[in-house]
Image (cartoon, rainbow, N blue to C red):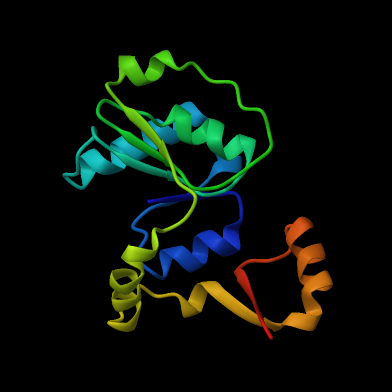
Length: 156
């Protein structure tokens, strides 16, 4: 399941394995949680112990991810933001949940991750675009203006 505010990104991820996509601009956090729970129940999936990956790097995204905690959930914060996010830490206790953060993949996991890509189990090409390194200023401007729909890779 994937949640985003960009219909283009939601369309792309639906073509690459997301069984459910939801535009966060079209539903409040409570509705999002109910929609996901109903989908899980309909598909015979667990309505508990969700793995929630927050990758947006926005305060709104982190607040939404926190609101999706269910009993036994694990929230992995991947996206970075300088935004202040207000939340109730007691939700971890109430849901017997946990929250984790990371600053990237440990190097010892690189070979296994690379094997998944090379074996075709993870599709990357549809989610990245290459640009010459000398276009860095334009790419950064586009990133800050939220004009990029794929991850930019700068090539020397």
